[in-house]
Image 1 (cartoon, one colour):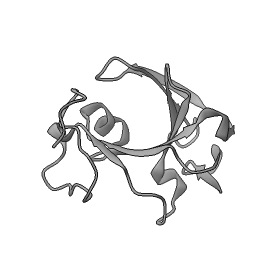
Image 2 (cartoon, one colour):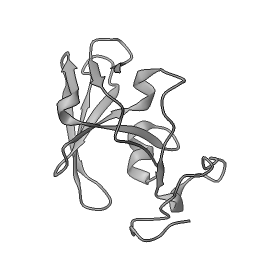
Image 3 (cartoon, one colour):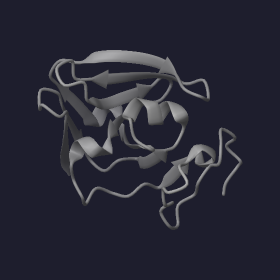
Length: 137
């Protein structure tokens, strides 16, 4: 299986082979601000299964749990297409950049404590309420 994620203008392309290791939705305030949406939806792929083509700019920040994250975005249209989390072997790709209505659903929801009241939690997936790994709704 091969999937291609694109920025809005098409200059930045990420080709992913195989299925994602996991698909996570995150409701933390930092993801809300980065996406301009109520949550982030990211597909985690093994780094060796990712090919990036085109120019990127990067922005690095520390997540709410202390992980260093480097976001790669298109310098032309500004779309945030993928990011990597230091200490993992994964590259995370923004699910919306695939523009595929049949993309696998999320398997885990994070930061339910800041989830917007009107966002419906997908049935049957675990939801971590906050930053504590043991807190599950």
